[in-house]
Amino acid sequence: NVYTDYFFDEPAFNTHDGGYVALETPTTPQQPLAIPPLAVPDTETSHEVSYTITAQEGEAQLLPGEKTKTWGYNADILGRTIILNDGQDVHITLKNNLPELTTFHWHGLNVSGPIIDGGCHAPVYPGKANKIDFTLHQEAATTWLHPHPCPSTAEQVWHGLAAAVIVKDKHEASLHLPRNYGVDDIPVVLQDRRFHDHNQFDYRADYDPDGVQGPTALINGTVNPYFDVTSQRLRLRLLDGANRREWRLHFSDDLKFTQIAGDGGLLPDAVDLTHLMLTCAERAEVVVDFSGYHAGDEVVLYSDDTPIVHFRIHDFNADPEPLPTHLLDIKPPVVDPATPIRKVVMSGMDESVMLDGKKFNMQRIDAEQPVGQAQYWDVTNTNDMTGGMVHPFHIHGTQFLIISRNGHASYPNEHGYKDTVGVNPGETVRILVRFDLPGVYMYHCHIIEHEDGGMMAQIESYEAGKPRPKYKLMDMETL
Ligand code: C2O
Ligand code: CU
Ligand code: CU
Image 1 (cartoon, rainbow, N blue to C red):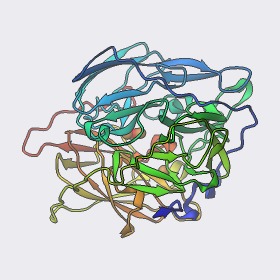
Image 2: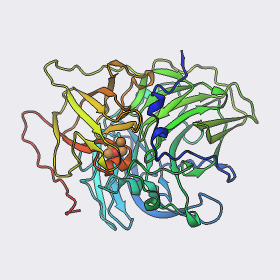
Image 3: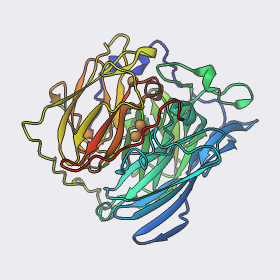
């Protein structure tokens, strides 16, 4: 069975919002797709790893002519890819060499909030460093690192801060899947920018409270990229790292591809698709099989009608072994029928966006849930189809399961663990949420300007029967 649609309702696409900026086909020459180098651990043993991650200013040759002033993690733009292993003790030094406060948020990692998680309560001041330590218990997944200071997350991401964080585990390593980093397994960070005078970004000039966009696709920080394909199969770890843009992805020839993983790890079963839509912060790992092509051919990845990556096919060795079809056994946690269903409402547009009828307040804990208890959350987007948007709903510190959409089955490619889900206008998505660790966690729309604009709340997960820790919550003044 090959699925050939985006599943999302066409009228809900962000193209229908008045401020939508369409992607344009680049006129600059094609350049090799940048593959972020792997971050080099300070120390590493089989059960322990330490890294130093530095947020820094830089400049990058994005267009011919003048370089663009950018920010990155151990890099001029974006960041080196960080590899973590399930079961490892992880020590990370977080250094801020930027001219302003930032935080280091581990989007999708199973770590405690609010400090290690790196949301708005974990500032690292300019010129300073913090240290975090945790033991990672998590299935193989593509997660990511981005800044999260309130309310300037969006602008910092726009400067270039975002890095892939790949979690590995034994089970994934046992499957016949491409995993040679940079060769047949590559991160693909999907972003868009507008270039102003002297090839510079200008966030303020482009500001839109419904999300900042630009007409130029920037893929792993590359304008108009090509990638040299030297293997029959290529695994793309797609990450929507845009502030607001949805990506509607498809290949030339309507080439079929196979989705093997979502945000939180492997899907239970591989899903064959020709079209895939990602909303902000969502990830999809897909495997593309080029066996029908020959050296000299080109396969193009599009978003809508705009080419965003050119895959140049070279000679490769045939891989006759099929991909696994069953990937992961998922046992959903059992919900006690006495547990009430939590209602979460995303409403408004522009400056009037709210979560549960309120604007975010750093000092206010909006909800609580016992550690280990599974609860249904009904997440509603009250926008209507005409002026509304798909709001990508994200929760820190957990991977959830999608149970239903307006009472109907969830999409076939969202049966694995997720931390972000696109909620259509007028839709209620039921998710099954469980926290592994006590802490304070943010949940919000991941259109980053909506998050900065207050479409965000926070929940405390607590250990029932134990005294509650006192969390130090920042406020705008103490920042
Ligand atoms: Cu991707 Cu609150 O974060
Ligand atoms: Cu997050
Ligand atoms: Cu939103």
